[in-house]
Amino acid sequence: MARASARHILVPTEEACKDLKQQIADGADFGELAQKHSQCPSGRDGGNLGEFGPGQMVKAFDEVVFSAPVGEVQGPVKTQFGFHLVEVTSRS
Image 1 (cartoon, rainbow, N blue to C red):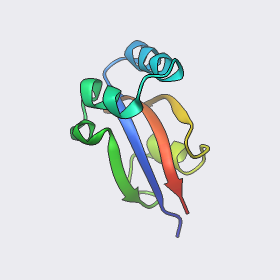
Image 2 (cartoon, rainbow, N blue to C red; image 1 turned 120 degrees about the vertical axis):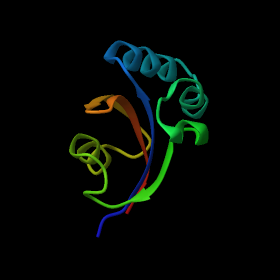
Image 3 (spheres, one colour; image 1 turned 135 degrees about the vertical axis):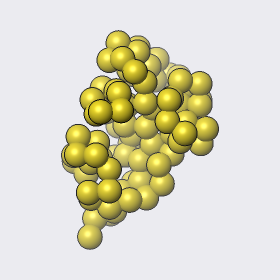
Image 4 (tube, rainbow, N blue to C red; image 1 turned 90 degrees about the horizontal axis):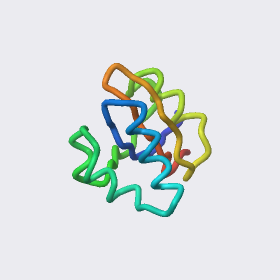
């Protein structure tokens, strides 16, 4: 069974998500931005979600985590919770 580790930043708007993605592209630290901006409790830990398997996260999130290149920031990913930036940190 596939397993993945990921981190994310959850914000309420697509615009905020795109702005944060640009900041990361310009050299900002993903973990620091997660601590400052993420509305998920994982933000306190730099957005780290730990390790999980397929089907443990909502569908849109799951699809990104199990298909996107490792180490590349993806998003905005829209779910019922808001808009996410997602970075797969490992997958096996």
